[in-house]
Every structure is written in C-alpha cells, then in structure tokens.
Length: 108
Image 1 (cartoon, rainbow, N blue to C red):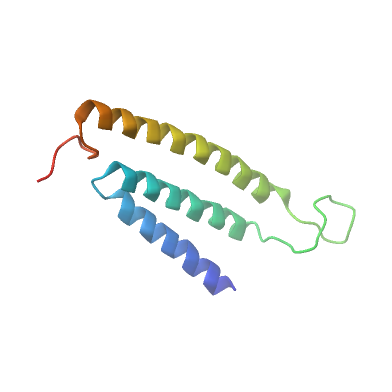
Image 2: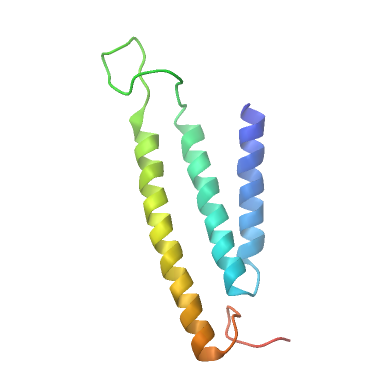
C-alpha cells in the first residue's frame, strides 16, 4: 500500500511539473492543480492516518491525529481559491493579448 501511495504521489508530481513547464495557460493551471493534489496526499501520508480510531484523545488507547486532516482541508480551500484566481488571470490575459501563451508571445 505504501508503494502505491508513493507511486501516485510521484506520478502526480511528475505530471504537475511537466504541465507547469508548458507554454499554454490551461496546462499551467492543470499542472498546479496536480501539484496541489500531490502535496495533499503527501500530507496525509506523513500524518500516519489511523483507521477506525476516534479523533479525540482519551476516548481510546490510541487516537487519530487531526492535524493532517485540518492541514489538507485548509489546503483544499486555499487551492480552490488560487485556482479560480489563476483562471481569471488567464482569461484576462487571453482577452487582452489574443492568445493563451504564458509569456504573452505567439506561436514560434
């Protein structure tokens, strides 16, 4: 299970980096989204999630750590807001420049 999680984090990171380095705005936004998904999975993996354990200390012998869940929830909200902001910037750039290249240039 750990190998599958590590492979999925690595695959999301590789796809995200590849798409961020593209010249089109939509690919960059999609790459940033993939990178945020990879970071969220990494935070969950580092939190050592306990299955079927209560999140309150004292209710059982061991408890789940609520900090990774809170961090990921916060990251999802911030990631959604930043994705909406970057999409609006891309649309404004498309309207003003007439193309969707990241550097503002046309086709080579």
